[in-house]
Image 1 (cartoon, rainbow over the protein chains, first blue to last red):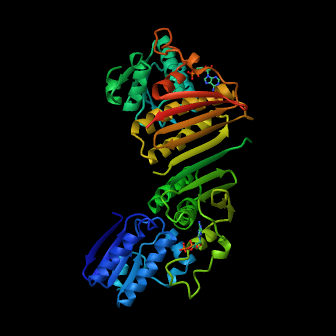
Image 2: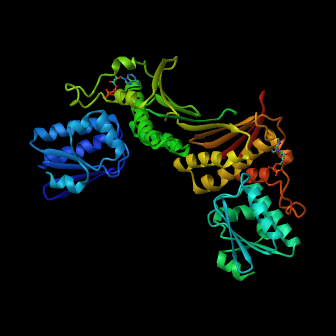
Image 3: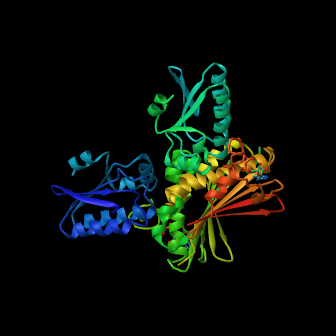
Length: 110
Length: 110
Length: 140
Length: 140
Ligand SMILES: Nc1ncnc2c1ncn2[C@@H]1O[C@H](COP(=O)(O)OP(=O)(O)O)[C@@H](O)[C@H]1O
Ligand SMILES: Nc1ncnc2c1ncn2[C@@H]1O[C@H](COP(=O)(O)OP(=O)(O)O)[C@@H](O)[C@H]1O
């Protein structure tokens, strides 16, 4: 399983276990949408174990962020390595997402 | 350096750090012959860190063993992994060499 | 100096589940050949996965009877990966649209060619008898 | 099922210092492709290093102007490595002599072809316009 999901109070914590790419992004999308459907509103996706994300992975993050906002929720990202930061900067997605240094800081800032 | 040499009493301990192959076997040969020249007679070559040995590496061991015996000395080998054991069995070199499970047993049996 | 190179060639079915394995084989080779971290861990994996995904999804339209072929060549001067699909081809430079513009930044798609273009020194394309090939070039 | 394969190709100067790197690239690929431990850690590295050493030392006689080429192909059914040298070739099966016999066991040389023969399912040879190729075959 490339994703693990757990709850901390009202926050849904998702760990991406490996790369977020065309082969698994649909699974991430579906699992987050299921949680949203179930009433969750605060989402944190953590990338500690992720080396790179491809354009389809970035696209899924963009569309999830939109969906979550439409439901009055909030999506945060944390623990991007330098390569991931470069990807977000090149695509200017660093201006679209709330990005925290690490999980603790992300949780505090909800 | 692919070999490290140290002394324990009158025993010369040689650790092979990696594979013993055509690219480095001459260095092993020269260093052991230098020690033999310098008066050493008991040699233990340890293969803890070695994955495989090629035919030229086996050949160097054979010729060193002969040289050492001609000088009244003794060569022992230790810590062969299963792949190395297979190599020695296939070439019947397990009948030519004194092979010990590990360094301690080899040192005891000199 | 004599010629020296390493090449890697792969052929696999038009299934997006293949992309990660293909990219891993290529990036492992780059690491083994001591390319800078930025090449082996970011530029090559992202550019190659975009090209391979497009070959599977756009070129071959996930047709199980069609295969994708990747050929990577590492020489002293460059890293070149060719990705062959069995589609009709397209004009890459015409299809790149800036995904950072305000009207496009919230779209789900359209970042693949842009990232390839950002990370690579050069991109070439050819239409062949059997399909389309895109050539990803990184100078050393 | 569609065709599926992985190939690795290398060209390098006739220098025995190259053998370890070449063998490592090949065995890393085998590990990545989930070959059994015995293949990736013993049979392939030993057989391939023998063939590459012989290509450098015997085929090309360490001539710095001559190169060795290795091409490995991994398919669903087999692992095939071809080693090309620019020498005149030789008759492999004529040159294999049992190195375990009492009169040969204390010799320094002569175990290379024997080990290749022990570890491989099949060995083929060809003389080409540009030299000699030995083909190492391991069934999957
Ligand atoms: N191999 C290909 N064959 C045919 N068309 C392609 C190929 N690669 C890309 N394209 C075209 O280029 C467009 C842009 O690709 P890209 O930037 O990767 O974004 P996306 O795939 O998200 O649309 C695709 O929508 C497609 O029309
Ligand atoms: N690529 C080659 N080209 C020409 N002759 C070769 C080649 N490979 C092997 N031989 C011949 O086969 C002989 C046996 O090889 P081998 O079993 O590896 O033992 P060694 O190399 O120790 O002599 C070599 O001595 C050489 O004469």
